[in-house]
Picture 1 (cartoon, one colour):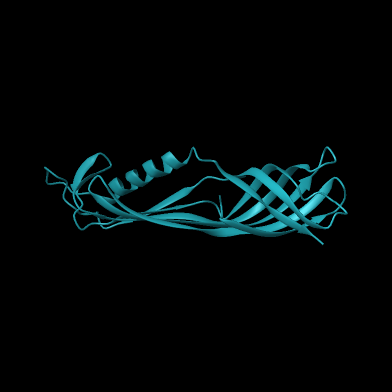
Picture 2: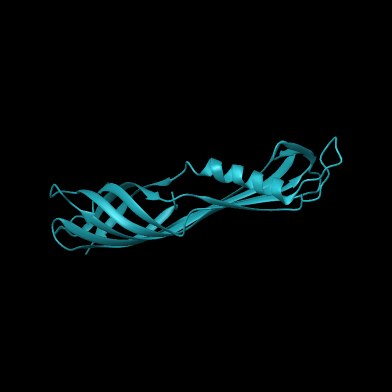
Length: 192
C-alpha cells in the first residue's frame, strides 16, 4: 500500500545521502456484500505523494529512510438495511434505513523505513530498488445515518443521536489501535 504503481525522482546528494520524491497511486477497490441484515457497498482508494531523505550508513545500497507523505487514503462503507441489526446494543429493523461510515487516514504523516537502491552510482541504465516502511498516523471515522427516530424492536423507544454517536465511538475505538500503515514497494529505476 498505498498504490499499485509508483513514479518518482531520486537525487543522490553524496555517497551517504540521497533525496527522493514520488507519487504512488492507482489503488481503487469496490466490493458489495451482505452482513447481519445490512447490504453494504464498500470502496477503498489510496494514493500518496512523498518526500524522503535516504541515508546510506554502510556505503552500499542499503538505506534508512525518513520522510513526509501527503495522503488520500479512505474507505467508504454505504449500507442499506434489509433486516435486524444492533446499534449501541439495541436491535432495530434497518429495512430501508442507511448507516454509512467513512474511514480516513490523516492527510499528512511522517514516514520511516528501510530500503535498498537509489545510491549514488556512475553506472547508467536500469537498476532496481526496494522499500519497506510505515506511515505513522491514526484512522478516523465519521458516520451518517437515517436511523435516528427508528423504533427499537420489541419496545416503544427509538434510536437517538446518542445511540448513533455511541456506535460511531465503537468504530473509532476499534480503529485507534491502527497507528501505522505499512508500505512496501519493489521496482525498476533508470540512471542517466
